[in-house]
Length: 228
Image (cartoon, rainbow, N blue to C red; front, side):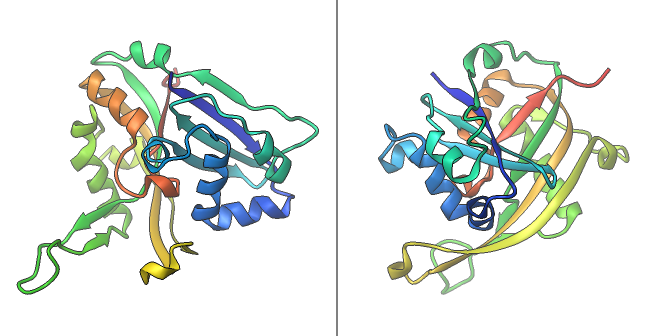
């Protein structure tokens, strides 16, 4: 049973800032809240995203294949006086998705492209991040249908699907022996309106994630009813 969870983080605590500064550390904290998912295959099925609308409003969203226990995370970076989190079965909502529905969405992703392979170079082309807002919007439009939805592409696109919180984060990895002790990750947050075109594909994307860097807080989309 897939679970969708939300945890409120406390911006006044030192560990909150430590976790926000390092997607590697946040990933470890999220996985520590799912002790039954210890292997790498299970870890790949856990998605998380941090939304920080205001200085004192920091929300951690998690999609996981089993019920979490965020007690330890709340003791580190939450509000111990209110040791609770929201967690609900995701399937009933997913089952209600149908073609033609409109939803407000929010997604933090890692928009990248794979450059053509150069003669004599590595077997695979180099992965290059999209850095401008226009490139990132085009990336979303390009991949949307494969994830089961579509977004506006005309002059209204900037209103219906805005790109915010565009930044590159650099953080350490524990796998220093692999010769890549630091990771630079380009992230963008999208918010807007979508229309469902393939419910099955959208369900798969909402549970499995969209794009790369899922372990580092990318790929989790949430939906909400459109405003009247």
